[in-house]
Image 1 (cartoon, rainbow, N blue to C red):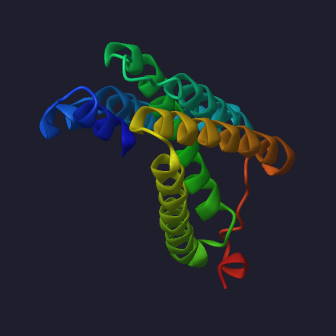
Image 2: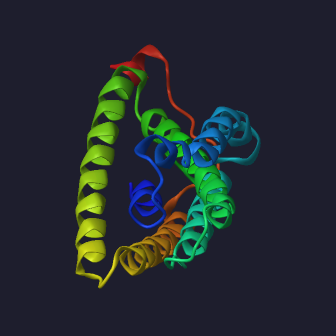
Length: 179
């Protein structure tokens, strides 16, 4: 949300070109999301989620050094690394969320997971907005918000390393396991 605002308000990009500025992140996100399923089968959940959180942390730190002189090309690598992290992380935790329950509960688990994801996004957006608006100017506010997000991703890595199982989840799909 804040990169397009930065490009519009600080560099004078039009709304369309500011939105297009997110394409490197979105393209990498979609490609990595697509291949993360096969990576999950080969490497397991812990490795993929850990790699995703590391990429999100690094991408956020790279994007957190904004000033009014920061150019768009200098943002592209951070956007791409962030996109890779989001692609690895979200597709894998979604898979985990629906695979740890019986088949008859998979749609409920997916719905609950999605609801928590939306609620978390709203809380995160509110937190970031507070950080950005309390800063003396937009670039320093975005810098502060992205730095906080990078540290939160680092905390997420610690949680992942401590609590995500690295082995494949086995679900009992027999009739006894479904009921």
